[in-house]
Length: 96
Image (cartoon, rainbow, N blue to C red):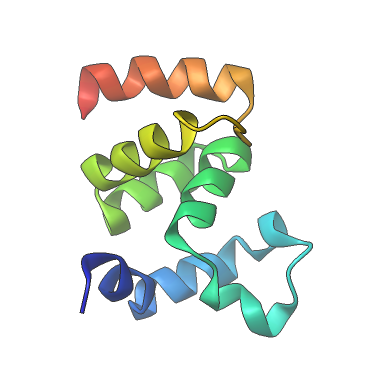
């Protein structure tokens, strides 16, 4: 089983998704726990608060979150807000 699958199937991650389900308003309630790790990271970094970002780092690991962030922000089409990209580029350079 890949690391992403183990993280995604973690009961604490599923609980975390339920606690932040308002960030995934367009996804059917029964499908929310099956979102990709990339979507979870993107949504929390774009729309989450300090507490949810901290919890994401605890559950997934700051290095894995940074890896996903850099992978997603190096594409042609990016869903991150410009201010989010700037902030987390600076943050991850210093802390990850």
